[in-house]
Amino acid sequence: MTDPYQPVERRLKLTRRCLEVLAEFRNPVTIVTKSRLVTRDADFLAELARYDAAAVFVSVTSLDGNLSRVLEPRAAQPSGRLNAIEDLARAGATITPVGTPASAGARFAGYITIRLPLGVAPLFERWLEQHFPEKKEKVLSRIREVRGGKLNDPRFGSRMKGEGPLASAIHDLYTLACRKAGIGGERLQLSTAFFRCPGNEQLLLFD
Image (cartoon, rainbow, N blue to C red; front, side):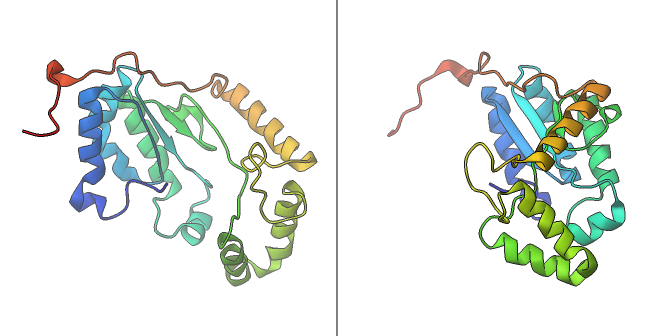
């Protein structure tokens, strides 16, 4: 439900300990993150990837470092995320970026059209007013154009990509970019074929 590599993860290592257990059982796992800290756990991710049981989705909202600092001030810079993709690819993990060159080592790509559910919409509007007041109405108008005249469309099947001519144009550009880069054509699938119970012993609920 959220990025598993929050700043406190450097100290607590909760995600790393979870990955250690997942690797032991060869249980498939996917991670969505904007943090370079994911590369710290490349050992467990690479071990899982040997059994088609791991994928990392690195969210890259923009390659513009200045915009990224304003939009995501606490997240890693775009260059850092690209470096994370390269490091994980070298380690053998499966990487899925959003808007990232295949030259960084990505094997898949994906995108999500901006969503503004519940309290996110007024928060985003205030952010636009503060940082880009001259572009506010144009940005909101484009969002409404792909969301049936609203700022959000929660319906299953349209909420991730949007609808209408603009949404179709975005999809076509994405498809063309993937084709040129040689990524994104196949559907990412993880495997449970190598799942195991180490020790092959039945655990007891009570001693």
